[in-house]
Length: 317
Image 1: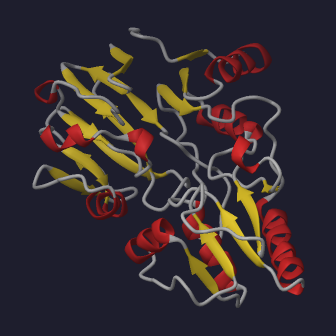
Image 2: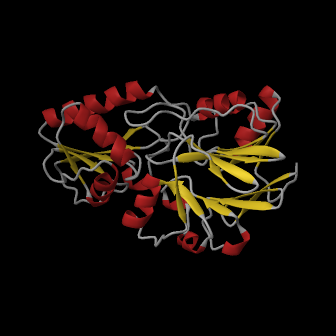
């Protein structure tokens, strides 16, 4: 039987006497797990305690983020994962799959003798200027999927249209002789916005965090040469009366930016993308986690007849 449990801030999957922990955010008994899997480098998906684990699996990009940007001490216990290349253990295998969320983000298909589990972590099914979107893996027995925007109110415009909105804003602000600051999370938006602007021939400056991550992930460091800035959220730069700040995120603007411009661009799937992913997975059972987990699970259950529930404290199937 497969057990799926929310534990230590992460997701514990157990089967056939083997135990795997995905994205723990709190200290955990490191000797209890055959492997600890990290889906990506956002700070709400790992704990520095993973340095104590027997074996940690993550992408090469995530390893660099955690070591060089987050300062996590990771050594020989790390196995670098590559999409679609299985990692074989004695009684199970781990298949990394592209998650489309941020650079280096992975989903994990866990294959046991008695069944399989796909854990998405954060994901995005839509292609971006940098990444291919995540694709559902059909016929896993259990799907553990994120539900950050799992409410029908979250329906985003196509990415290409949002890109055009950003470039139009750049033209309008620069035409007034002002500086535009595009502020989104440094990991994710920092790379996507930089690539969009540079591909459009626009000189870009960066705040400290975006500069650090783009040196790691894109091999570029160019903080002061452009009149359009890509910045963290909130931006790590002094703002003045000549700056127009646009918050770039899927969620609603925070209080500190209520009077500024909001561009709705997310590195997560919107509600429709999540629903489509769930349907196409053909999983026997679906567990939702993060964000609007109850609402998404209920929608999938009532509208599509899927066996879908928020991830429980423990369950056996």
